[in-house]
Image (cartoon, rainbow, N blue to C red; front, side, top):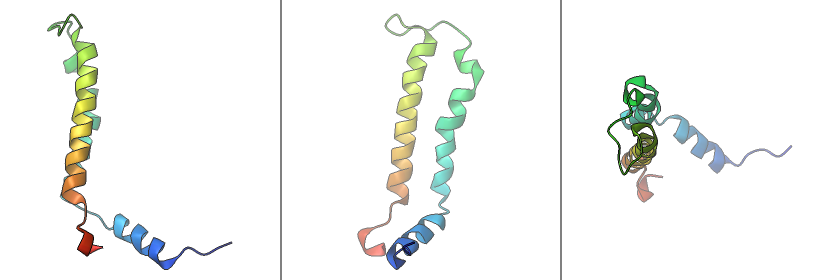
Length: 81
């Protein structure tokens, strides 16, 4: 069995030590769609679609936006590696 290269171990350790407070924002796209009050009505309709359907698309955009924000705020500069 081959042993991992030292560079790979350093990368894994640095990722494990990432305790940025920005990571807490990733709970938003997980928790918000689980709140039933958002889905408990048929109106308002958007382009004829009930609230449930267009909110599903809104949650996708929320997740993409939140993930992008957290990535941009936590990525390391090229010289910091």
